[in-house]
Image 1 (spheres, helix red, strand yellow):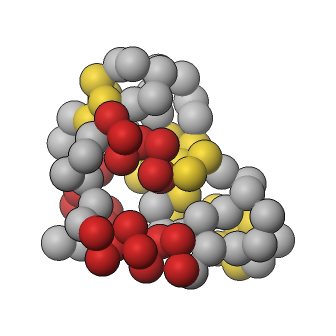
Image 2: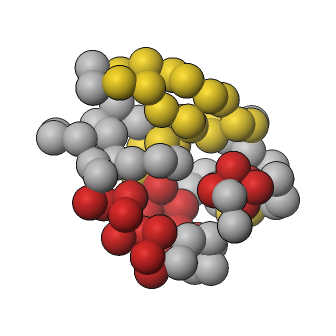
Image 3: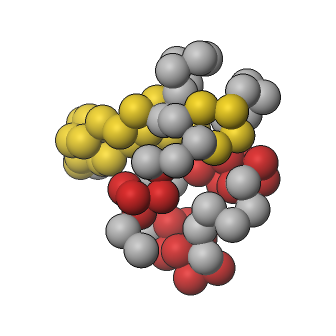
Length: 84
């Protein structure tokens, strides 16, 4: 499944609200561009393509939504991460 499609349904945010995240493409950091999601309640930004110190880690969201990413998707997310 396309990662962006995973966020078109309600999910549990780290702020303990059930929300539909807003998808934002092409936000720049020091290492390039990311696709991120933003919680409409707490406004927190999460990088969905790889770990980046400029945004919250999607692995925090996976704790509240255990089926959000497959093991392979989680592995690729961490493997492609930026230095912190």
